[in-house]
Length: 404
Image (cartoon, rainbow, N blue to C red):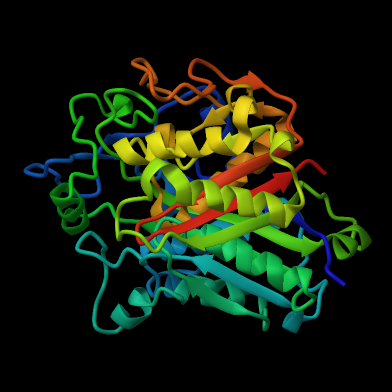
């Protein structure tokens, strides 16, 4: 029997806050999280801006992670671990409720941030800091979980892929609870230089808060963000038995490969369209039932155009009648963490029946004419919502969440 999978916990660490509540409030207020880079001196780089995690994280993390263990983790790994621990605490989830071998941890991680910016790396901890499976391992160690424990790396779709894998494991009774997470940061000179070489990043350094401009005619590339996101999944029947607060249904998903180009999406968004179409089929939901989309919305020329075209093809006339937003307009592109961060935001939208605005949409591209909710937060009746992640390498993922 295929079990229904539900969400019983969410949390985020972003440029707008150290928890989901603070991030959500700032998103609703349309607050930009992009500033001049402070983690190192960016002078001389074409891009000198990013959405860094809000100040105070290190002090905040000390109440969760012992000093001795913290030295074995990068700053990014600590984000991933703290985000999970806060989620478990926030939603009163007892890690001992289930058999330990029925609980798992799956993370989406591109890298651990052990770059030239990382402090305190030495020969004793360099291996531990560099392991991209370290986040899921540390969380598993924290709670003694002996079930599935691994990391997925599919670029910007990494933690969205992790969500799909976790859902299948629970739906097919191979696990009862899985902490799904993502954490990432590529705010370092070497990776910024690399992205500048392929003209992927915004260079709007003079006004950082206006740099991330999804769906705008004058968009000039994505803005790097950093942070972590966690979504806790359980089988509905078990969650009800333990008296959990169920936040949303995780109705379905699709994971696809475009098999087209290492960095460019298929023309006219065909790969994106097929991914969303397959996700709805997997969730047994009709396109007409979709009420909201949290778009990948990177602020790059091709992504924004092709994602818009894909939504129009998927939803036909209804495409113009539902709110589409890009969280990246405020928190930047959090790379491997984007799937769970934006998934958590989508779930919060369903809970609150409200969507945040897409800021900086002052110069709309006439080719991009969906309802991008550009001025202020909007009350919306949401029964089903999509969260998209489309990555370099042609890794596409669409997650389908529903009102419980």
